[in-house]
Length: 169
Image (tube, rainbow, N blue to C red; front, side, top):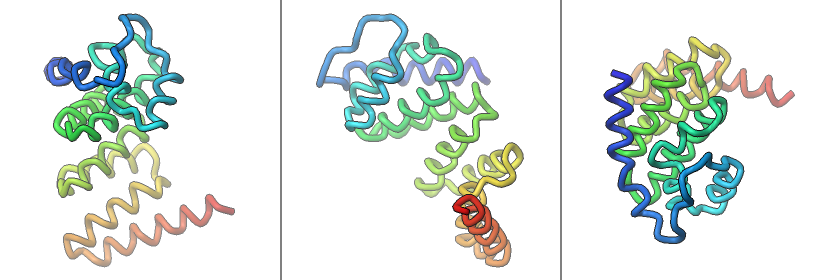
């Protein structure tokens, strides 16, 4: 499954350099994540997608890869390439199943596209890793509320608020 996901994601991303018309992609080499973060912060999403496509993420240090998958997936959403963005998030989560931030981005991505039934197990996976994750509790609360499970939703909303309040102190 992991190999198939990798192949699918790289096939979908093969066209990413063509989308970056603002500047040509740099030659192969290890990408500079700090420079890519700067491009991202200035909404130069096509360039981010270009610099992180075609196996560039694999050339980063392992600890930088979850963030790179997030940047790539988010940048692909802006030229309305959501299927590729979803593939990148799923690939990142399959490679880094304990990265709560990447899992959170995948869950929110799914939930924002009315795919709550797919987002719910991702939120639950986050809570297994980090039981005090306010965002995951809030996400589950939103899904349960839409399902009409108000008592269950309220429990998650209250816990998310309690966690959030505790962190502000």
